[in-house]
Length: 270
Image 1 (cartoon, helix red, strand yellow):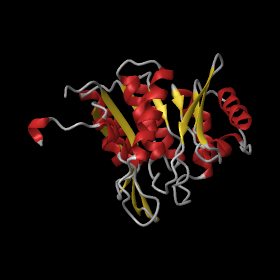
Image 2: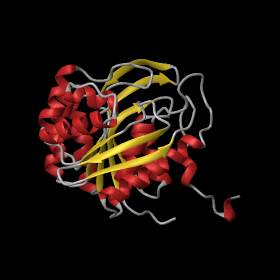
Image 3: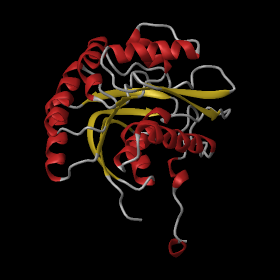
Image 4: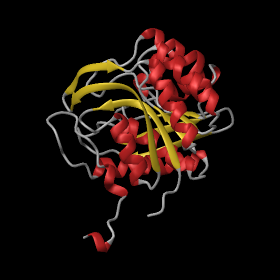
């Protein structure tokens, strides 16, 4: 397989491999692109929850981004877990210097098991600075509620929240609807000119750890290959849906999805 593009991932590490930088690398690689990383935090976790979080010095995060991009310039950037305002300032400064237009921001705030991964000061910094730098932000419903100070229980609420995010500077918003109890999962892509609703089959499973990280990385990969935003979101959602359907059923808690669902092994390796 020929490498299609280059992605820089700025995110935290997940020791269980289901989410964070590990899920991002698996996603980018399985979709045929080259993954580079700037690690923002090291977490000790498994499918049952997060045990601890060790923060990486903001200066070192800045250095990881700048030094990597001086050598290999990415076609797109995916941003995940940013736990403090100082880290957000550092990332903002770095991406302002490297000037990549295709930036996907997944505002990771709460782990699947419920652990809060970001403080209130950082949330405000995210809203003031980083959201405006991104081509797309991809909050789930709890994250969209935190960012907009609204309660979301319907699709109309999702659209209202997306509009509020546009008002504070977002260019495009994809609110993920998995937390609403519908027969289908509805994700809504919203900007000033257009609205698009993606409908996906809902699978009855507890193995959904890392779906948000995976989706934003998949969208970043398709964008980096030159596909338009709406098509990139559509393909990313389909990739995640297939990964949920074919999950490996690992762990005692919220298990990982199958990032390798897109990979076909050549006969000579069988």
